[in-house]
Length: 631
Image 1: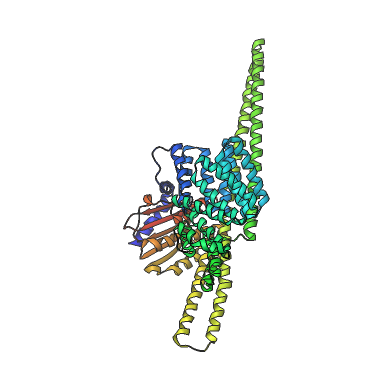
Image 2 (image 1 turned 90 degrees about the vertical axis):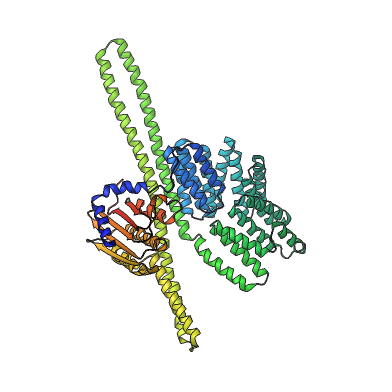
């Protein structure tokens, strides 16, 4: 029955391809939009995003929804604000390439509508990004440009945010006196505006500055006030950050007899019986807010406290956790090179956009000047009564005006194409970076960890037999070797690089066969040649994600994966007999798997469709052009 329905679906692909695009569009929207979308509703989403800034991906969810609504209403200014919110989200997640891409998109929107405060917001964001890469001089220059715009427009909230960020930069440079001065100004502005979010942030940064200046008492006071405010706001990231920094002050002042006497009273005033209980709470909120950077800081603080307490076994545990997480967060030379290259490309594209915009302006001015001149000539010709000359001038005016209009349209088209190329280049850079990192991790797992495990097994084999314990350890090492090879294959399968997509999908299906009691069958029809390696990797990742979703959620017993080449299109079908679901009820914005599939299909300029209903299984159909569509 399953095979019969599969071949029916395959014939539908060949004969109903035009309908599939429309169906795919119907399931693209992850959340139903209201019947009437206006600026008030979009601004409410921005407010919700700001309120959820410490609660992981919830802030990004509201920003994505605001972006969709802004596009529907054609509100360019609010599209820029949505891009800014998304850039800030990815910056908090330490995904700097994504942050740069969205910040650049925001800048383009602000330039279109001549929105100075938006440009100031972008200057502030790029300053934070430059600071993350250790380029402090460039960061200070961007902060200064943002401050000038905010002050000219009288935006005190904007000035407050920039002062806070610049103070953080000074703290990192150990210029604590300068940092304290900026944070005190920012706190006064936040209190005047009665903005508790900004107050909490300023108080926290003041605590760090006072700690650096050796003003321990003031540091405790500011951090406590910040913690209580953030706790009342349910700001997970803020709570974790405050508690971790309080622990750092504790670790730095353990030797002080005065602090020893007041430590327990201070911790009890915060609601904790010990500093380690406080650190457990900090770790809980960092993980709840999905903030890996705060988790890393927590590990470092716990390590310092445990070493001071002489609890070396527990300290070793946190040192291992810190080192593992550090590999994910560190900014190596490749990341810096990628940042510099991406930044150079964006600057180059901006310069070309400005040149085209200037040429457009010159063409418009030229047209306006020609229009006035020809009007005057036409009036003089009428007054003189020379009908023939007036007619010739009028026809000449029409031809030149048409030529000028065509020239202006051509410039506008070139500007639009430039923006599209810029967005494609940014997306390509992100995807290339992801695949490069997958390949690097795969090689490291195979070459380093795999060899290390093999060496351990060899040494274990040379040890004298010690009953079941030695046999059990050998079995564990074997399992670890198998798991490392499996992870390495998932990250970057060698079969894909050597033999192409059909063999790679066959190997993927065989490797995941019988997982969770599910039988996977792979079928390939027609002669399928090699594609460009980036396109083959994309198709492989799409199939890999579809199978993972099926094994994880569908509770299926049988899955058929089918790959077919028809004319200039590659068709991928994944069908299961699982529990099924209602596609229209799935929120794609919160579903990372479906969002990953959709972004890759869009990048390949293809189409996709999902047919499913509860209890009837699921069929996913992907259509990919073999050659990229020319813009």
